[in-house]
Image (spheres, rainbow, N blue to C red):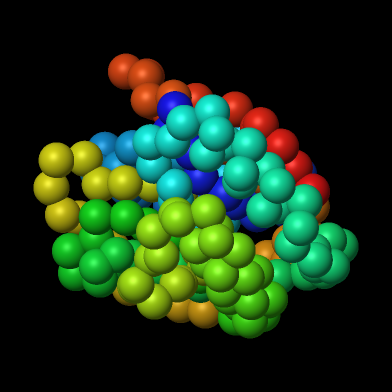
Length: 180
């Protein structure tokens, strides 16, 4: 099974994000495959293929991590793109508040999962909420969407969840296995 650990945000904030996404879609719809609202999350750690024993160890890890961030707010303040706006493959919402909270949780997860021999991620962790992925080519994003005034959405942290990801033709299905 394919697993990852992510932060879930409140539904009220997702409604605001959906309104902003509608504006983006009107201009970029043909270029991107959009992530469904019910699949929005901020990935903390991608595990990949894992066994039942791995799943149990990850649940134990989550039970042992001190998670006191529930109810805290993060703030999405702008759009971002990987690798960059001129050749965007992934379009996402970036943070200006709460980034340190998520980086701290990520660091704790890396330390705790290493105890069970899960591989550490050596890349810099950039907390973000993926909105869409470019279809077959790199897309360029208009300057009007790059402004910090385009997005200003506060979101409440609801939980940290271990997800199973099932890849399907119509898009991924995320199944909640355990939440704290």
